[in-house]
Image 1 (cartoon, rainbow, N blue to C red):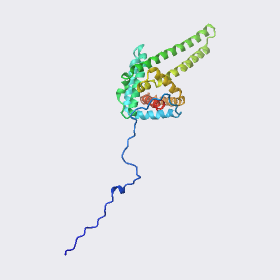
Image 2 (image 1 turned 120 degrees about the vertical axis):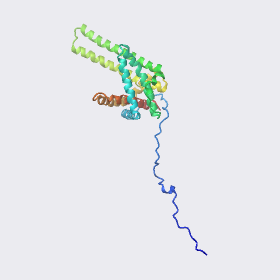
Image 3 (image 1 turned 30 degrees about the vertical axis):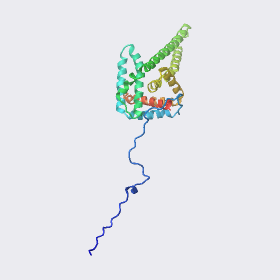
Image 4 (image 1 turned 60 degrees about the vertical axis):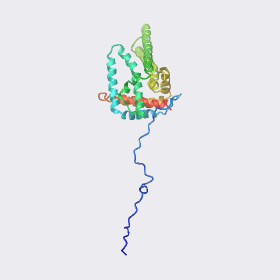
Length: 273
């Protein structure tokens, strides 16, 4: 009988599942989940903490960084458009005020598109001309009317004050300076509420389909409820504006789109659930 040949003794392979650490974090890349739309509009604007004023800049810068080249291209086009309009005598400045809500509304759509992961396109600069354009133009008209009324009131106060001082024989440098200061303070006192009513109005019109007057009222309330974060936002913005102006104002190509993005972030913070 021949000698049997037994198979060589080989180590049994260890199942792959046994070699993995069950507590090891997954190595596959998981993308951040983005909302597919904005949340519902609140009936009453949120009151947020003062620190949110700096967070609006931070998150706005993040949106800007997602499409830096496109944002700069949009900013350059917008600035050139404003310069060309300003060269039209008399009606140029009027067209600028009417144009601003249309452009702002389109840029809010661009910010939302970035927020939801759909990306920014150059066409967003003109998207406000195609959606809710009538209500956006109405915002510009009401803004113009407000500026005209404020200017008229200030002119009457300054002119009246100087006229009374002149008739009374008390006109001098001190009286003129005091009258001008009163006029400036009055102009600011009336202009700030107007700016508050305009601030979020384009976003509310184009993103939430609100009529212009209701959007302006809600914008004013939202700003009024959040004076402290807006104060911090403004202080930071003032510093950034100084930096952006050095040496030849090229920094404004970054600052202008970041401002628009920060407005969108603040809009979500204050008005959405």
